[in-house]
Length: 487
Image (cartoon, rainbow, N blue to C red):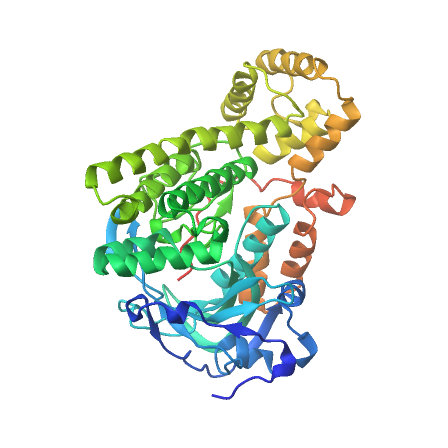
């Protein structure tokens, strides 16, 4: 393998490689036969300080055939509770190239996903298919535009090789950009298979990387737990605001940075129903839309368990500190959720009955199978006739209560309308639109539909005329929409 030139803008550091060897295995990507660039994210490249014009042979770099100068590829080891069952895991088909230092001093992981087998592949081929990698690109970019913390996608490259799943599929490698890939599962791995000192080293590294303001505090490990709890409470509330369903909220898919990570069978909800599940493997509904907040708390409890040896030398005292910290999560989540829902309804201040007003609307949406996004869109423009709720006695009563609630505020309706516009997206990546784009890309090599979709999703709060057609609902179907893990 050859290295890329300095002129391309790569500026790698490799601090993760300085952790104990138990946390990773050094390994180069496995070259592919005939790489071809499908899509490249120029805005992400610019933010990273990369020189697009000087990135020679991007196909080779982002397929793993060439190694950027300064990179030190490795596969990370971690563990995780997968659907509640604990197991040893790791980067089975991904490699961390290193950490790109941006011109402004930011630090971001650059990871190749689908780059070949690693010691953690557990029988897998280490490869990925074009469809799931493009799905991650689309959804992660949509989440970024929605203002939700997320990993991002720099590029997708077709490999020119087939991957064998239920059928033969075209292969691809995705380049992912993340604040880091340190997971709850990374700490679980350290707690179960490492020493206490290795666990402490990992915690110190995480503090230095994500929470430098507290790394010198005497109670820094307890504060680490509390900060991760805060970030996850805020993140999952944001998911609920837009009807996003992650699909596989295993502990290895929860990043301590507070970013959304590992887009597999993810999708956005059309008809409002807390029991909505899109993942083909979630047969019991563990990760249904309505369960996401509670699962977030469950995952954080597992994180707290992994930190117990660092919280206090006395086991009982450590457990009490962890339990007290975890007990704050439901309150933090609810505070974030209520604030977000108030904004979606144009409510600026707090009144005790606000929660009932919100829940009553959601119950009506469930009863009448109203579209989640378009219901809030119609309220934003004060066009209640555009929702299926219109004409029902319950909605008329609710609407009067909402109007009275808005009338008790000093802000003008124009100001409140602007608040609602900035809180309610005009468009989301509708499942049928995503599938339309993926089908054209995978089956016909036509990426124009995907590019148009990405353009529309890049400004979800713009409410432009061009976005109107992307607000329409899919045709009725007797078969529920299902997504699959990106393997």
